[in-house]
Image (cartoon, rainbow, N blue to C red; front, side, top):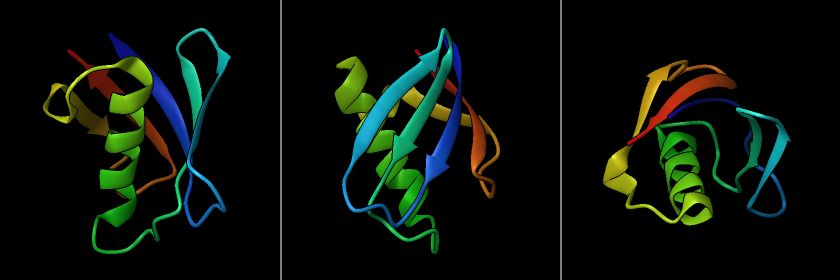
Length: 72
């Protein structure tokens, strides 16, 4: 499954919400430096979908707020 994600880093809380089918907003408390926010996004999505972190892959947008993510 491939989803589109809009990330908000340095949020006050960690939260995942589906805005439309296949489109999600992910709020993480980590800062967008040294890949910390990407790791936090993967962790939040793994928890939301109930899969292991190793099954989530960022396909596009590793350095952007908008990402395409594959969940195996």
